[in-house]
Image 1 (cartoon, one colour):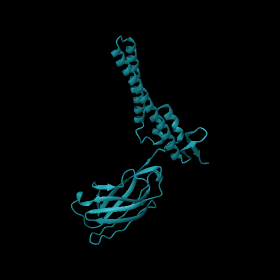
Image 2: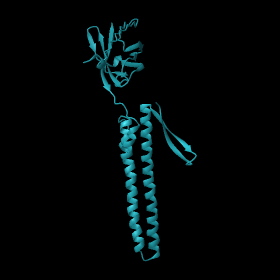
Image 3: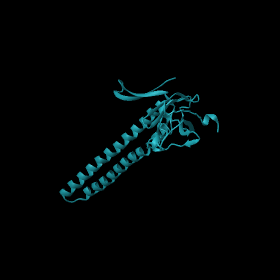
Length: 248
């Protein structure tokens, strides 16, 4: 496996239980490594540097006690899908895994696997949301958000609005067919209420769809850091306008 695909860091910790003396051996990707022994726990802190910001790393750890190899189970901390940065830590609750600890202990910590992450898309993905509400969100968030929820909300509101319109038309037809005033008033009021509900649901769905398009454009712009969206008041049109500025 290529070196850049598997960064191996060996951290040697010499623990003399009487004095808790320790020593470290680490590669250029680990800095500011130090060890703390608190109660029955061993805590290793480190900085992970010189790695790609577009990758995440899995860290494995094992301990050598003389000729014995210990694979700790009671460990927590920065072990899975770790990003570059400082103040990383791994904590081992020693006595949950072994009865006692004596002699010299060596910890071997290595970055065993790397994960490439998708680069989020730019503002052009707003065109996808223009076609299908929520679809652009999938690409500007690298699939981290449940984009289909917006699709369901928008189409659901439209469907309810369409249902209201169909029932409204049915009630309006019955209004024309009614022969007494009470029935006419009943069917007319029902038709009027359902017709208004149609506009409310369709309007709400349209607002969510427009908001989704704007969100994708703004989020995509931030991903690319190439421009910004904003609102301003146009004196000539006497209305609030959405504007986009691009950096060159």
